[in-house]
Length: 107
Image (cartoon, rainbow, N blue to C red; front, side, top):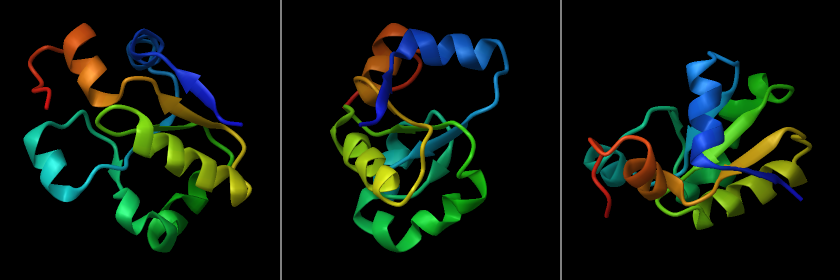
C-alpha cells in the first residue's frame, strides 16, 4: 500500500528543500486552471506514460490530483510496477489551495 502525505507535510518538505518528485495526474485543462507544479502525467495516459518516471524510481514520488482519488489510483499503479517510495497527497490541490496557498483556485 502507498503512503499518504498531508499538505502540511508537503509544505514542510518544500520549505526544507527536501528532494522529491512531484507528479500531477490531472488532465491538461485542469493544470491550466490551477497549478502547483510537478511533472504532468494525466491519469488517462498514465499507463502509457509512466515510464517518464523510471529515472526517479528510487526517489520519493509524491502524486496529486484535484482531491486525491486519481492520484491514489496512480500510486497503486506505480507500486505494481516496482516503485517503492510513492506517496499520495491527501485532499489534492484543492486542500493545498485552502490550507497552504489560497492564491490557487479550487474547483
